[in-house]
Each structure stands twice: as C-alpha cells, then as structure tokens.
Amino acid sequence: MNYEAFKYQLLSDLQRELNPAVSLILQDIIKNNDTHLDGLTMLAADSNMAPTVYLNHYFPQYEDGRPLDEIREEILSICHANCPAAPIDVSFFTDYEQVRSRIVFKLVHYERNRALLADVPHYRYLDLAIVFHCLLHSETLGNATILIRQHHLSFWNITRDDLYALAMENTPRLLPYEFRSLNDLLVSLFDDPAPAVSDDSLALPLYVLTNRQKLNGAACILYQDLLAELAGRLDSDLYLLPSSIHEFLVLPAAEQLSRLELSGMVQDVNSSQVAREEILSDHIYYFSRETGRITM
Image 1 (cartoon, one colour):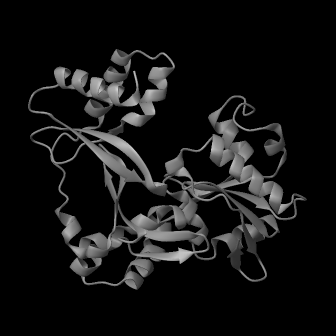
Image 2 (cartoon, rainbow, N blue to C red):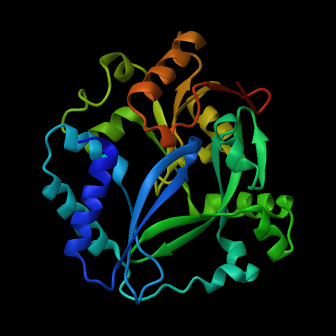
C-alpha cells in the first residue's frame, strides 16, 4: 500500500469509528522550512478547536509492520485526550490590549521560509529570520502559538517595530531561558547517556541553551545580554551550534576544534536526526565577548 492509499484507508476507518457529529478535516499544512504535512483534525459540532495529528509520521511505522488498526486507535486516543471540554474563547485575538502581553519571537531559516515570510512581518538576522507569534496557554492544549501575519498589523494599527519591542520584553519573561550541560541533561533523561550521543560529543564541554518550555528555544540567543553572561560564566567566546528550532548547543571557543568540523557535525545531525520542520540552520555561529556580537 502506498502513502495515498494508506492515508485514505485510515480516514475511512476513522470515520466509521466516529460519531457522525464529528467532522474529519484533512488539510495540507505548511510547517517550518516549507514542509508540507497532511494534518488531520477531528472537530466536534460543539467545539471550535481540536488537536491536529500529522499522518505522514505514521506511514513509516506502517511500512515497518505496525498494524493499521493500532495506528487508528492511537490517533483516536490522542484526539480524545486533547480535545477541549468546551469551546475556547479566541476573541481576545482581536483585542490588541489583550494580545500585546503575549507576543513573542522565534527564529526560522530565512531562505527555506521565503514563501512564508512574504506574508509575515519579520527581521532578517544572519541566515535566519525573526518572526512573531502570540503565545497561548490552555489547561487542555498546553502551550501553543498563533503566527502573526501582515494583516494583523493593520488590524491592530501597529508596526513591525512595535512587535519587536514587545517580543523583546515578553519572550524572556514568558519563556525564560534554561542553560545546562549536555551530560547533565542526558543523565536526567536516561540511565545511560551513551545511546543518545557519541562518545566524542560527550567528551566536549557542550551545553544546551533553550527555554524552560522547550518551545522555539533557539530564540534565546536574542535575549538581551544573555550570551555575554554565559560567555563570562564560561570565561570564553562561544560557538553556537543550532540543534533545532528549539535549542542551541553551546561550546566554549577555547576548545581546539575547527569551525569546519563543527559545521560538519551540525550538518550530519540535521540530515540524519532532525525532522525537516525542526531544522534551524546548517551553519554554526560565533559569539565574541569583545564585540558582543554573533557572526556566522
């Protein structure tokens, strides 16, 4: 069975299992890096919001022998567990005074998102782009974001610079940074960290910079004076290795590794370990204590 047949067989099976009042909506959803995914939403008649499950991720599992019935039951379980118990009030999004305290920024790759950026207020930053979101939270759905587009600026009667000023204030407050050694992080996650990374990587004094929510945490490099503080703590300039849109690996520049070697590490990990929509960049960056600037 190819992917198209798998997708429509799964939809047919799910429809038979569901109450007729529940609508199955399949959409082509464009994610980061111009990644197109088949997003399936199960929307109840009395609800205005529901989780989206991406079917593309299940097809390799099916090809590896996972039964279709088991995949269907997992999707149903995810949707039932994450559907809000009552309609969620999103009317606040039309009220700028309610939205302004929730505006945050994130980093994406510039070239890989050119089509998206045509409709999104942004700033170019090295080979990246700073874009803006409204951060939401609900007890059912947890943290979620709404991407801010050009028409929102006209509706709210604000400028791109207003967005940036708000995001610079809000993002560190709403998404405070977390900085931990990679070894400590792995020990907290696994009894034996060796399967997660190579021995060579573990031998390096690598640190993970993200935010406490692990949500678009690569943007922490933009927090005012944060890199200068970390460089002072480590008594070194810093190499910044983009692990994904959610975090950077930080390495003291005193380590005797060439930039070519480090770039190769990032490219190898991106090509083999990171989902396309999670990739930030194939390049490494350098923070200088003397200049207080990041360069490629």
